[in-house]
Picture 1 (cartoon, rainbow, N blue to C red):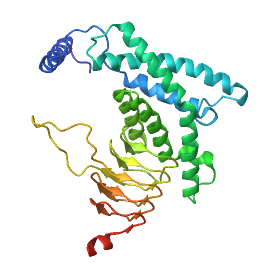
Picture 2 (picture 1 turned 180 degrees about the vertical axis):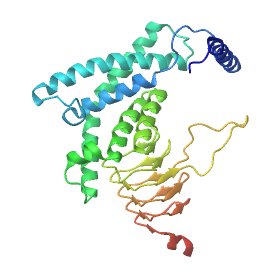
Picture 3 (picture 1 turned 60 degrees about the horizontal axis):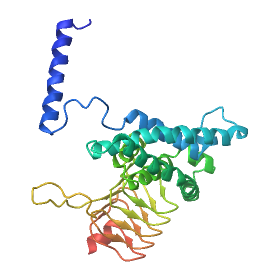
Picture 4 (picture 1 turned 90 degrees about the vertical axis):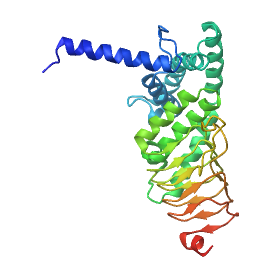
Length: 299
């Protein structure tokens, strides 16, 4: 049964009032006329097209042929550039409460996007190394193509490397939308600010959390339900959480962290160390350490 017109009018009015109260409490303009923030739907579409540009014959349209591959990439780059500039303009304008002229925002967004597009070839080469690391590290993998098109850890990492570049360009909202898209489909939560080295592999993946200021070296392997998190949060004089402080672990090269391990705080996991399953770690460990629940109990 459809609601009566009087009920719809009442709910519409109450929702309008709720929006008005929120904007008034936050000191926002009540009638800006246009959209203020990047669109989730538009950003999701953009990142799907970027994935297809990076791997056209694997993540591109199903009817694509090698003869049309370059044409597809060139056309897609043009549409991505245009649409990403539009979303970047929204974020830049929102961050500055539209204090600058639209033409100025358009020019800045255009420069940012051109620089981002210029990074795609190097990003593709890094992702090739990640795919090879996953294939080499998983005896169940039958070929590199299987890894690329089906492994959630690789899917999350493609999104992260795109999101990290966009985050470093000064567009954290768009970057976070991309990260959360991957999070929702893979169960892997990587903040776009996290720095991840080459040949990175997340095996199985579900439940992995990597915090904003985490720094991960080369040839690192994580298993499911690993957390690289913060042990505590500092507050400023007003009682608000301090933003941007280094609070997540540094994981050096060739480290393996097994399933269920929780590594917290700005500590360092030394090169070539192995962290056992279900370990709770809040202290730095030397290079080539072998850490298990038993070794921690002995300490």
